[in-house]
Amino acid sequence: MKRFVLLNVPGKATATANPAGRPIVRCETPDLTTEMSIGGTDTRDNLAFLPMELRDVIDSTGANVRQITMGLVREDGQWRLLSIGVLLLDIPSLEVEWDAEEAEANEITALGNLRRLADAVETYRRTYFRLPESLAKLGQPPSRASGKNTEAKSLAATREHAGLVDEELASGNKDGYEFRIIIAGADTLGAPAKYQLSAIPSSYGRTGKRSFFRDTDGGWHAADHGGAVGSASDPLVQ
Image (cartoon, rainbow, N blue to C red; front, side, top):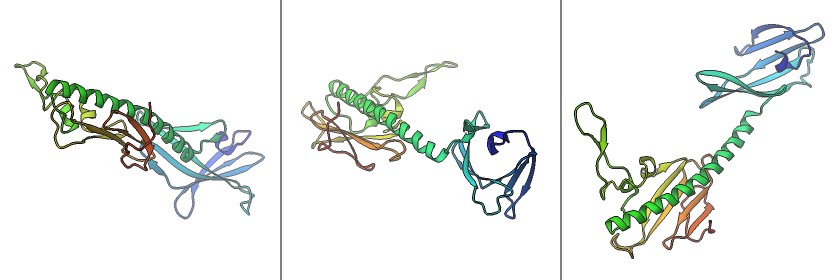
């Protein structure tokens, strides 16, 4: 209780409920009595937020009411308190910061994945003398059991399953971004055939903001399109 209500000495805690059934925790000390009113829980994935009001019981006007949000995180099936010093973290603001950090990391990874796809497409072209009609053709070949009580083994790579990227990337959805290939021409045959690659955030603002684009000449571009596909007119990136 001390860290919640900022009392200097231990107090006696009692619990009641308001007319809406929400809990009220009172802490009494020889010098001061405080109340902590707890609002409804807002649960988001592995985070939970509890709005709270702290006040001195003799403050009838509410002039010194302190409103905070208590945050908890679920780890290994247990809820743990997130706090800093004697003041609880502003979890909604912190969540925005976490999302921004995650988005920035995803953007770096997305560009790397897009370059990986470009390398795979070029390897596919050299091997099969054509471009893949979809990213799925760059994925791993299926597996089959080689005998009784033996582990499954992958079949040889083919034009349908070239084994050049992992299945997640071949599905077009990985690390918070969606990827696709666009054939820029009438057919996919031969070295002259050209293509474009794009990557857009799966959840704009949360998993990323910038859209990435590989043009038909191999240039790499990036810009914030609000989650839409980029273009060759976007600024170049290294």
